[in-house]
Image 1 (spheres, rainbow, N blue to C red):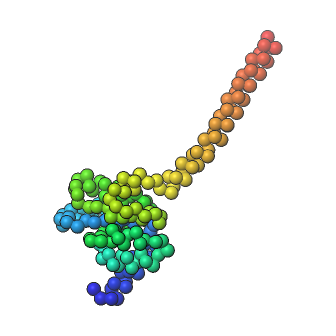
Image 2: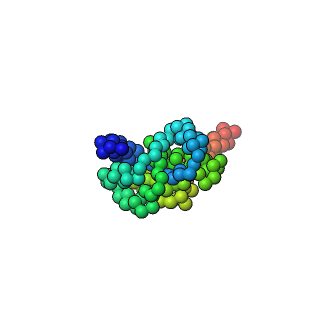
Length: 177
């Protein structure tokens, strides 16, 4: 690969890393061609971009970013590396890896992930990544928590008003009788 080609790949990766806040670095070495094609098809079906890139090019692209990715240099950027990008969900790739592992045991390993600048290193982080909540889910929960006291107050006021109206109606019926 010529120097110009490497520079283009680094530039492309830098742009992806800067614009897509969710990426996973995996190790799919030792997989057969059929399993690799199955993985690529599954990625395509779920809207995840999967590419295999040399570790040195990944490292050079990550160096240009504001976030400190030096933790990846020691263990993540060793051996065979494939990168999964998903523009909207931080856990879509983790779910894909888990689903793929159900049918293809010991075929793909999570080496590391970056979710909104947070670093996750090691395959043991896969469960934590599948349980992550998206920004929209977190905002929805906070709004729900903020709304529940107001709903309780309104419910109490409305029920009290209904009771008062019932008492007044009963009193007015007694006076009329």
